[in-house]
Length: 288
Image 1 (cartoon, helix red, strand yellow):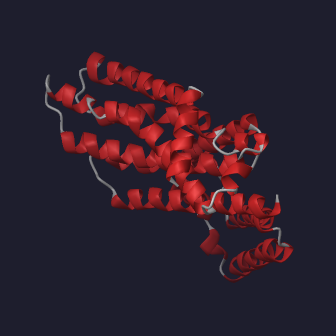
Image 2: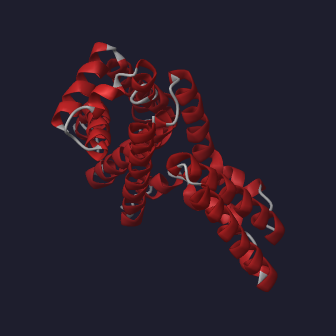
Image 3: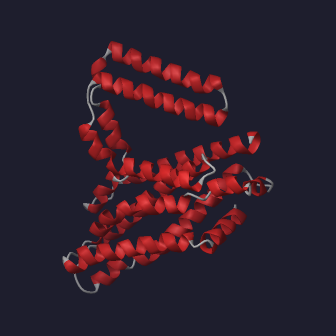
């Protein structure tokens, strides 16, 4: 794992990816601080973080697009597979490298509340609670980007899909207000989602039984629920879209509430997508 971590860190800073990522994050933070804390004379640094969280839509694809996809394209991933380490160690090593690249600019950003406290009243617990949540939000999005990168050999495709995924997650709470709340629309959406998940399972396991079996069983369950008690599906789709939003869960921290459930949610997303990444690489390692 340590070898993978050192290897990835060297690649990031040799290819300037780490510098570009850090520069984007620091520039946007500086602009946010200029707009909110300096020009508007507002002491709440958490407002800056709420303003700049949209930058993840740009910087996460930049950071993650080559982490696995480029190695698959150049076949250098086979060198990692030849080492006496597990696929899990490889994925965790790569994730830790991404985390280090992300944490470095966050260390500098963490100095902002202390600097502002020298010139006015700053409620540090809220500011630093928001910074902690901001870090977990970033790591959750990075884990999603890693998984997307593991699905393709093209950096451009990985970045494009990642941007779409980030945009959808950023706006899904807003879009939920325009989504039909009827039971039939929820049923159709559930079936479509289960088909997509089933195809992913089949892609990763190469098992028709698991993939198509999952689709059939979940679709039958959804139809039975609709026939027995259709009201249970009403408003389900918009509610799910709101719950899936990683960005909306950052809002309580900006309002001065340290929401532990949001932190647990971020950790769950990280674990889930790292698991999917491991499964994706396992498929290539033994079947590629």
